Amino acid sequence: MRYFLAKAIALMALGMALTSGLAEKSPFITLSSTTSIENSGLLDYLIPRFKDRTGIDVRVVSVGTGRALKLGETGDTDLILVHHRPSEEEFVSKGFGVKRREVMYNDFIIAGPPEDPLDIGEADSVERVLTLIHKHRMPFVSRGDESGTHKKEMELWGLAGVDVQQYSGSWYHETGAGMGTTLNIANGMGAYVLADRGTWLSFKNRNGLALLFENDPLLHNQYSIIEINPERHPHTKFKEAELFTNWLASSEGQQMIASFTLDGQQLFFPNALPQ
Image (cartoon, rainbow, N blue to C red; front, top):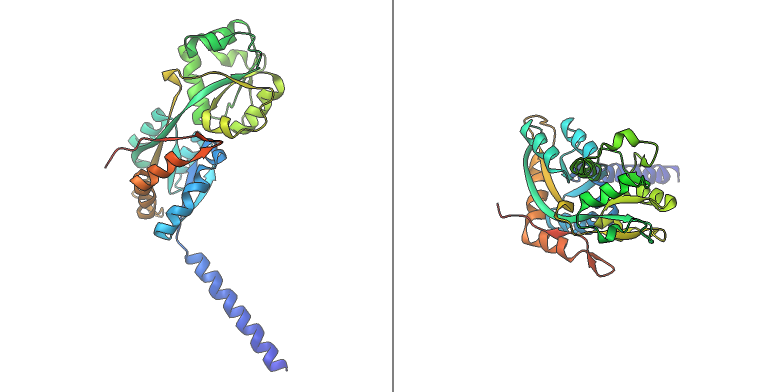
């Protein structure tokens, strides 16, 4: 009896070891992507199809664009999917990334209290919107986290001629958090906020917020993917990462991006150019 029990235990241990070994050998890549994409559910929609096609899994690290770029610089990711062109071009020019490839876009919107006390819905430009908020010292909530959304917001304040840092803690509030948390805080404060449309559409707690301003060309929100340079970080999985980039930019990947909707609304629009 002891012999058979010992043999059974040994076989179970061997099976677990083999399973563990296979799991460790299962190919995967690490993708550092923005919270706006992760919160939308797009990657959960795309990755299973890519894995079916290639056998390669994609493990997502959801952070802001600034943090994703830092992970790329240190070689702690295989590729990044972000949305701030100046930072992306600098990243590639410094040799951290191989190439920058645009794959999709959506846009930013400005939300605020439904009663819209400043009538920003009638404004003719996003610069005018921000000028009104500054002039009347209305509460505005910023991510303040070096994300792509935060970087875009800073550019827009600059175009409006407003140095918001001098108002930090008065009418201008920085959360240092992701888009969902920032929207929740803006909702609680009855404040204005800049958000990407994808997160806005997937955000459920918006009884105290309304979409007030949109469709300014300056609110265009381009997403690009960049593989980490294997010459800088030889341990990264460049070939596998390149497969994901090429698939995302392929007709199948682009069609899947276009077909991803929430409550009947398309969240992202494919725009990858042929190689």
